[in-house]
Length: 63
Image 1 (cartoon, rainbow, N blue to C red):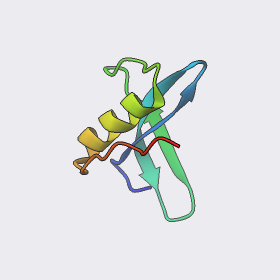
Image 2: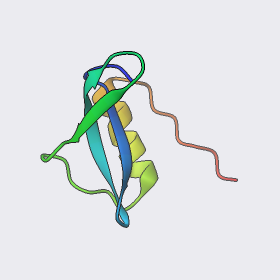
Image 3: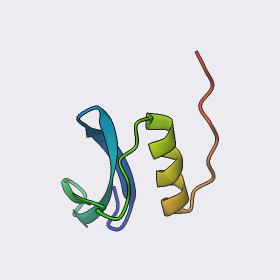
Image 4: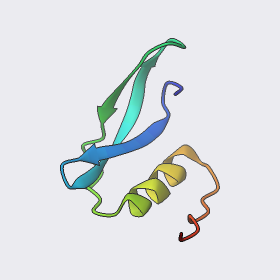
């Protein structure tokens, strides 16, 4: 991860969005974004992370 990059991780039954606050190539540290809601669906959290990072979002293909 790069400093300032957003990601999502499980938080209980929900998903929480984090921002990378430290990265040195080997390790990284992230803090949760308190302004963001918790997401029940991992795909909704993934979509929001793509928006925050400025990436083009494409939904995952169902299996």
